[in-house]
Amino acid sequence: MSTLAGKHIVLGLSGGIAAYKSAELCRALVKAGVTVQVVMTEAAEQFMTAVTLQALSGRPVYTSQWDPREANNMAHINLSREADAIVVAPASADFMAKLLHGGADELLSLMCLARPIDKVPLIVAPAMNRQMWSNPATRRNVAQLQADGIHVLDVGQGDQACGETGDGRMLEADDILEELEAFFTPKVLAGRAVLVTAGPTYEAIDPVRGITNLSSGKMGFAIARAARLAGAEVTLIAGPVSLATPRGVKRVNVRSARDMLLAVQAHLPAQGVFVATAAVADWRPDHSAEQKIKKDGSGQTPELAFVENPDILATVAQSAAAQKGALFCVGFAAESHDLLAHTTAKRLRKLVPLLVGNIGPATFGQDDNALLLVDEAGARELPHASKQVLATQLIEDIGQRLK
Ligand code: C5P
Image (cartoon, rainbow, N blue to C red; front, side):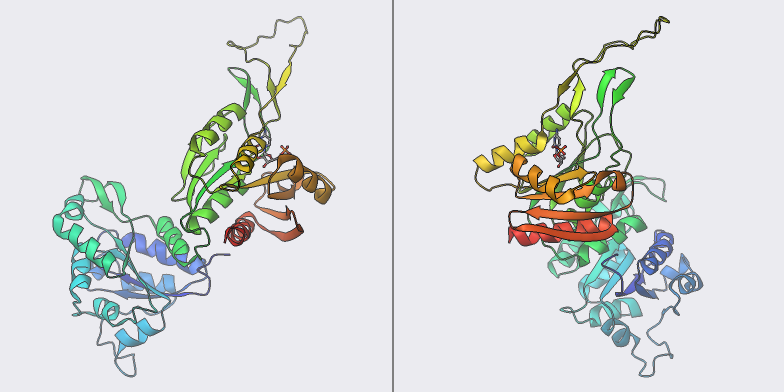
């Protein structure tokens, strides 16, 4: 479940072509369980109609500070007092300049000025042409808005409606939603660096064939996302999977177990937490043929010999133990039966403080799972839920341990 569920957000639109994305943002917020009150400036109404946003939010839109629907005729006070946050998307260059100076000549800026700043955060998603974005006036304004405690989101990069290319596009609706999710997530891993391995590995037999497994990478990607939402700097070492990289996560793609070990070792310095969710192949062919192994028609099958892959988790945990606690290691165990016994034994064998057991065949490729957290003191179950919910719970658990 989204941390946004149950929140009440005032979605403000100022004038800019990116306003078309706000319709999608409004819809996504409602889908996440948010009640959305839309407020539009006169300029915003040049780009979108209040009818569209009323239909999507399920509430009448406010466009004027003189709106007679409010019994006390103080829409700016009433709307801002009930909000968990005000999100202005798009925030035009002009609107940001107005915010900066405490301008209040229409409802949206008036409401932003009138909000109780200690209770109602203001989050703005800038949208403008690249020259406007890089103009010293805008640079100054962004810096001052941040200094005033206003949360200024990043801008996107790419083609702009004017035909130019560069920085200044408003973030996509999904990205804004993710930033809002991050904004409301407790920062249990603030300031921590977290390294996660995920997905299967692929061990080549020849240039066109190899050995892999059914790991989807979903659990590891969910953990990387949850860690980032909780304030961590996250690096995700991913085996061959086609999942989208969670926003704000640095991803390094690898193929084989040995590549994964090298990538982990390269990124290990400065990490505070290592979570090994990857389903690393235990064995690889002892050599990979340079050319495709051909069928010769004789019915004879090729002889494959295997060698054991390095155990990435055990290697990392061993050096972490030697360095006495600078790195907190978490492993996973995909078992088919006797989960507690196997997970407990594996934890001791791999020398990790926390090992997370799950039933492999039941979870590979699925969107949900159930986890058993095994540590020195015993075991705790995280009952059946979506992988994202479990990832959030696991990150909260890790956050508690690091306190
Ligand atoms: O030994 P087993 O594969 O069951 O151990 C599972 C745990 O060890 C997982 O955390 C997995 O990511 C990690 N592992 C590893 N390198 C291997 C094998 C497993 O990091 N070669």
